[in-house]
Amino acid sequence: MSYELDHVVLWVADPVRSAGFYRDVVGLEPVRLAEYEAGEAPFVSMRITAGTLIDLVPLTVAPRLNAAPGAAGSAGNKANHVCLAMSEDDFEALRTRLEAGGHPVTPYAEKSFGARGIAPRTYYFADPDGNVLEARYYG
Image (tube, rainbow, N blue to C red; front, side):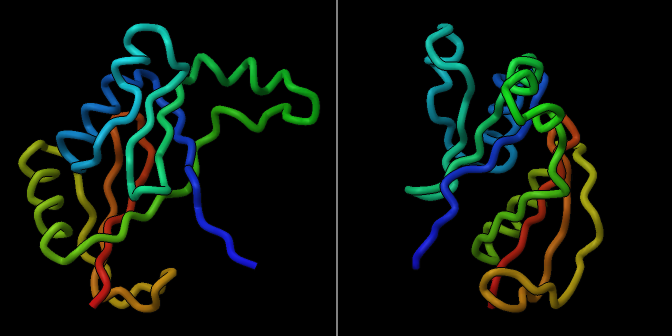
């Protein structure tokens, strides 16, 4: 059996504003941003890898999803955090952009376990909607 993570959905107040943060600060490329702005797509996505996205879904969609049979209360909730793995250089560059933009960043944590084993260092930060992200690199 072989699985891969396809996407993670984050609830946001303003997908265009959030896409700007993920593009300009985090360094991810938007997918369907122009289509969303034109009213042709229901949300914006941010490309992590060729096969993985973060979907930035407007909170206005949550009541409709909560009304689906068996889904009451499932939409609009924040996840604990999403972890992004990157090179050490990208890890440090992201922290520099976050701090330069006035975005709070936690102190470094060391020797954190993840999908690829032990990461030497990690830190956490939040997007404009309070969704928490973790940045890490592996040695």
